[in-house]
Length: 129
Image 1: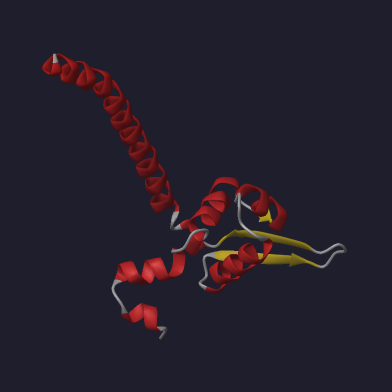
Image 2 (image 1 turned 180 degrees about the vertical axis):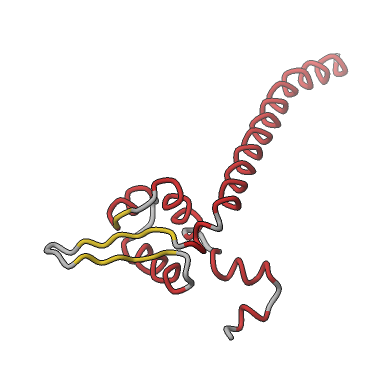
C-alpha cells in the first residue's frame, strides 16, 4: 500500500490533487468533459507543456483521469475524468464557491478600507487643528 494511504485522509487527498495545477486541470475536465492536450494547455493558462504532461500522467496514475489514444496520424489523445475523478465534482464546485465568496469578501473589505481612509484623514485633520 502506498505510503500516502497510511497518513491522515487530508494528507492522502492533497498528495493526489495538491499542487498548483491538478485541481485546475480537473476543473476543466469536469466543466468540458473530454479534452485534447492542446485544449487543456490553452485552458490552463501558464502551464508548460512538460508540466501539463507530468500532471496528466500523475492524475492518470492515481485513477482520476483517463487517457484514450486513437491510432491515427497525427496522433490523437483525449483526456477525461474517470468515475473516481467525477466523484470530486462536489468538492471542485465547493472550492469554486468558496473562492468566489472569499474574493467578494476581500473586495468588500478593500472598499471599506478605501471608504474609511478619507474619513480617517478628515478626523486627523480636525484633531490637529
